[in-house]
Amino acid sequence: MANCKDEFLEAIQGHDLLCAKLIYKKTYHKEPDRIALLFPNFLQNEYNHFLQELDFEYDDGYGFQELFGIIWYKDGTWSERHVYDGAEEWVYKACPEIPKELKR
View 1 (cartoon, rainbow, N blue to C red):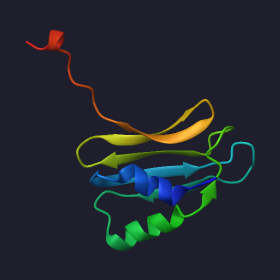
View 2 (cartoon, rainbow, N blue to C red):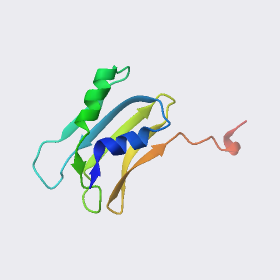
View 3 (spheres, rainbow, N blue to C red):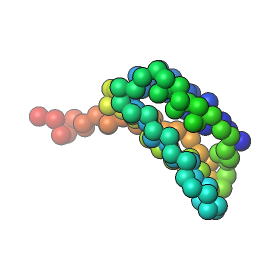
């Protein structure tokens, strides 16, 4: 089991947060999705409310993916929710450098 809020806080360490959208869905249940939104230019109370929405335990182990989402950073990079071989994690993404054969 993992705590969504703790994982989010770990993922954003060292980054200047712009906004985020997280979706929690139990694919094998008919429960409605839980969606947490953090808008650009958020205020501290909005950020606190967002973190409260993320403060829950979920199964991040092998099986169905339960947490989806993207975290955007002010420098144009992002973290995306990824599942590999049944295990979930946040993956940091940045635009790749242009290869030298494409530079003039």
